[in-house]
Image (cartoon, rainbow, N blue to C red; front, side, top):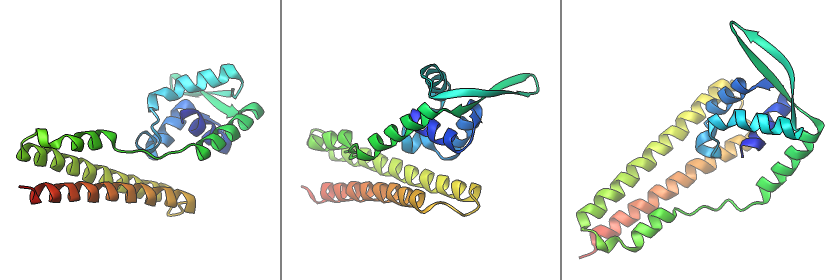
Length: 179
C-alpha cells in the first residue's frame, strides 16, 4: 500500500519524502491505508533502486538538504499495476478477534464480558470520531472540494464503523437478555 500511495502522490507532483509524509499524515493514511509513515523513506530508496522513482533535485532548507523525487515512466506503469491489484483484491475484513472472543464469551463472568464489550464500543466511538475529524481536516485542506470518490471512501469507512457499533450494541443487548 505504501508504494501505491507514494507513487500516486508523485504522479501528481514531485515531492520530498518529508512532503509525502506530511500529506499522508494529513489524510490519516496510517488509519485507513495501513501505511506506516516511517516506511516512506525506505519505500522511496527501494523504488529508486528499482527505477520507479528518481531524485530530480536537492533542495536546501536551512542546514538541511532534502531530495525531491519524481515518478519515472517505469514507475507510472508500475503504479497502474498496483492500482489494478488493489482494486481487484478482496478487502473484506472480519473482526476476527471480536468474533473469537464472542465464540467463548460464556467462559467469562457476565460483568467481565459486558465491561469488555463496552470497552470495544468506546474504542469504536473513538475510531468514528477520529475518522470524522480526519474528514473535517481533509475538507478544510482541500477548500471544501473533496472529490466524490474520496467522499465515497470516507462515507464507507464511517458506515463500517457504525455497523460494527450496532453489532456490539446487539451483543450487549443479547448478553443482558440471557439468564
